[in-house]
Length: 328
Image 1 (tube, rainbow, N blue to C red):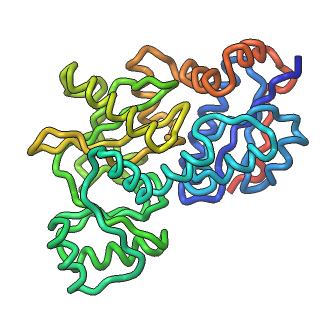
Image 2: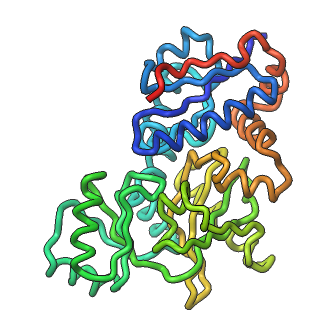
């Protein structure tokens, strides 16, 4: 039987590079702990063709953002004949694009906030028209960025004009969305199952990059404050939303719960969520009874098959080698 050698793809060139490095390193250490043959591989410094030179047979994708979650690396790996974890080319491309994700959900009647697409700077008068159409309080988001990069909450036309101008520096298409007043939740998906939901509470204006990765004041509640019926409902909705955009394997669905109606409103899907110590998927997995290493193994087993992973344990001459290239 051919030896199974896993490469953890991490780093890359996106705005989420630093988070990806942290996620990839944590996953790499877990795979070493499992006794599997593994290397770290940073495509910022080496072409993917070098994976064949390293005798890599399977790939764990831990690249966040563009180049990692948008279908490009997935397509390259398929062309190279290398199996990989998580969502494929189509699902990755759809989920990375917030606007296309909303188009799919809207077509299927799934709950999502009112929105408008912007592709150029707007005037104050145009901003006032947008606020009249959608609402006074809005969220502005680059269509293709993750980790809340380039996002802003606005309550005036002046703020909206500035936020759109800033978001357009990150992306040529910007999503302007009705702000949902309520609690934010996230549901992790693993091998076709919804893990326990997590509610996030932050003193920040919204759950932004600082709240996600730097703040010590962000509170995570898992189990969340939902009843068993509500937990079932949010899990089923998240699975439906995940499958609707052709995602598979593992990922995370973010939602709001409208404080007025109590309804859950879909925000977005993350196909390669963070796997740092502050990340949400490991928190949900722990509540479900899985250690970090067990979570990583389940992702690998779901992608490559139980026999492949079980038979791969113990290839020690490959374990622990790193091929990241140069650090920043």
